[in-house]
Image 1: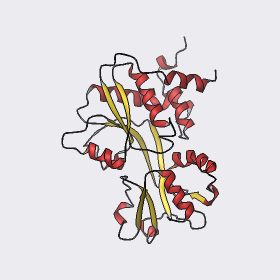
Image 2: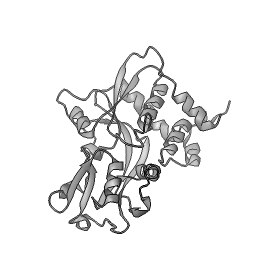
Image 3: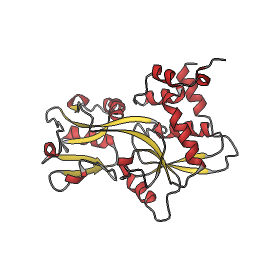
Image 4: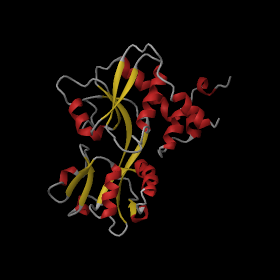
Length: 268
């Protein structure tokens, strides 16, 4: 069996019986690659983490809109669960004082996507004056939101693929989306016979960030468990295989070997 198929077969195994605590794991990315048909990166992440938790906790995937997740995380009763794939700037917690943030388990960057016949080259807010921006409901866009209603117009859609369709149809001038998502969605555009060749991705990242597990500050043992898992994920073979399948970049394998402890590199 090919190595990737074997790794996925192991990860798709059900969580161990007898888990003492079920924890809701919230995913606010409702389109590909995070949710794709009956699978996607979100469900693979939860299966992967449950395997690593070995029954001490069991994550239960819940997909919802970002604005619904924002409401849960801002509730006066406190946040109960774990949010997936977020970065501090996404929810206004850059100082990391409101929530507990795990080490990043994925590196990503946002890029401006526009039409080749009407390219948007970001050189600061002045370069966006008078343009139509396609965003996602509930998402925050630092560097853009401040100018909505003043020098640019924002419309929203449920997911990134819907915004690519808007660009192709000429209903928006640009969108901002993760480079990983654009690489993955090229295949869906091909299936829909959408002219991906009409679109261009900005040369410079609009922003760079890591993706984390986010919990309440009093999450205690669960936070410690997820911190340990997240720290090891970028160099874990099974997770690297999953990340590459969904068009994310991963650390160089040689760098992982250099950073490994003698116990981790030892052979039986």
